Image 1 (cartoon, helix red, strand yellow):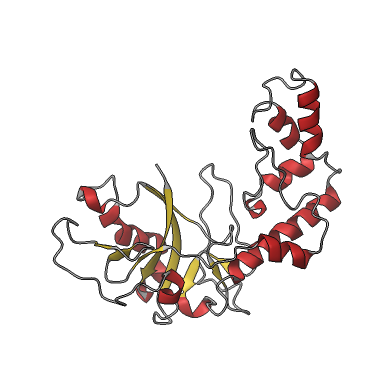
Image 2: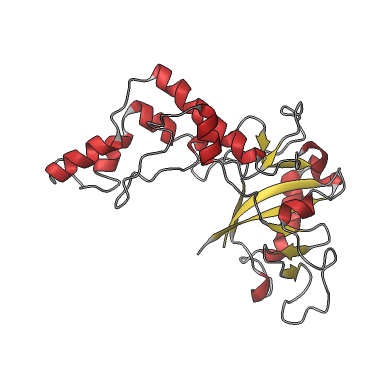
Length: 267
């Protein structure tokens, strides 16, 4: 099993019921539905992109616009607020395609700022290497060994570490678990906020699958499946560019009222 992100294009009329419009657009590709085997693209899904920087940068001045779409809660029900200036979707006119890396940069800035805020209200935390050295010097120091229910659990139980790593703006960076035991890069980062943003932001813009307004699921390599056809016998050719330019270049040229939504799918 794997995951993918698709940007779903919805007509302006979908603004009043984003979930209903998404359900209708995605239903022909549901692996759990009565669909041809080759058309199934997902078996569970979640709106996601505002909290992790893989969504869209919001045009300056529209950060509080109610037409913007934000992440659904995590699978355990905890909220996943969008980083400032980032969203999971909305009308194309409110999404800034002028700098495709801007969403990642803003989320990375939020990651830095969150650490600074939490560091001001929680006691200092011991770095991960202290726990690793303790375990190496005494393999019985942590019941459960170096795994998630042992050494890593003790490390993550520190209030500052727990508050930070449990927040979506930590962006899932670092890997304290065995065998890597890698600290989150913000912890102990010795340079400036600008350096952190430059070093940790994604260097390339997102390149997602796209579900077009006319029902084509375009994969990132340009291949396409239509919502009304069995892929084995589909007589149609997808409309649009003969050479797929990538998701962001395609999306940036859509009508301004088109609603775009990033959806993370399990498949």
